[in-house]
Length: 360
Picture 1 (cartoon, one colour):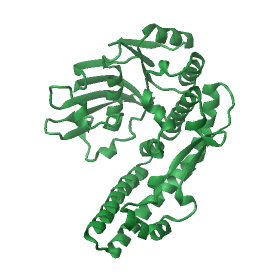
Picture 2: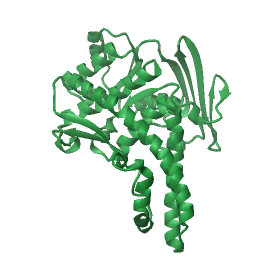
Picture 3: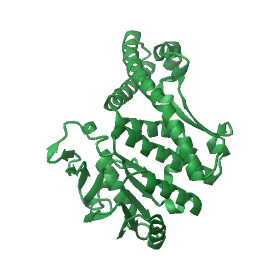
Picture 4: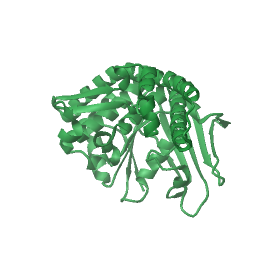
């Protein structure tokens, strides 16, 4: 089992210096809005992903009026303690070490200590654009497959290179088809690998989502989840060839796995237009539970679960269904926040789960 036993935050967001210890399966973090509950969860996420969950840059994590920050975490895995230190220097240089040994590449850290976070703005997974759902899938696969992560890094660099070339060609009014052909071959190679791995991943992930939706919603509804890709119909290399002239005109790459989508449907219509708020919240939690169970099956242990302000997002019945599933069917360490400590105390007492309370 993966456990976080302790975390120390120095000059991280609103924390000057503070250490928290965790000795229960569930940690219930309470306090008024704006005191730092979410920041504590984000610090745990940062220890796993080497970046903030909320997409803001490293400098945005530094406490106002200071320079640099440090996060230190003591994880337990297979009864062995593993110490992680992340330092952002005043110069902007970031350093990450495991048991005192620095990583040569930060990518070597991703997936070692998996976490799943649920935050209020995650409803955009349902309501937002395809790139959010694609990033969601990438986050799961990067934690479980180092080859996938390297292919994704390579693909994104090549895509940026190709788009820069197309813009430059338009400015200079000069084309170099041989150069573009070389980029396309490499892009198609990396992109096809990503496509094949996403395609293999999608069926089982879909079944998890559908099952969890029934559990959280408490009933059967006509929902569906499908992996959509332009590569279903044509090879990547041919797509790039066919679109080359138009790509030169538009100065961007129109086709590729950077256009893939995880389509969420209700009654054969987009979920974001058909679903009620309650249905959307049920689907969001189903996506996150599917992420957790997928990581557990592949890694051999459950990820740490970070639940931010979830009590405000679900009605009592759905909330109890969600927490009952997490507590009794996923063997994971849980951190959650709420402004009402008694509400958390009552529900976990009912579920028979031992809880550590932290008031910030």
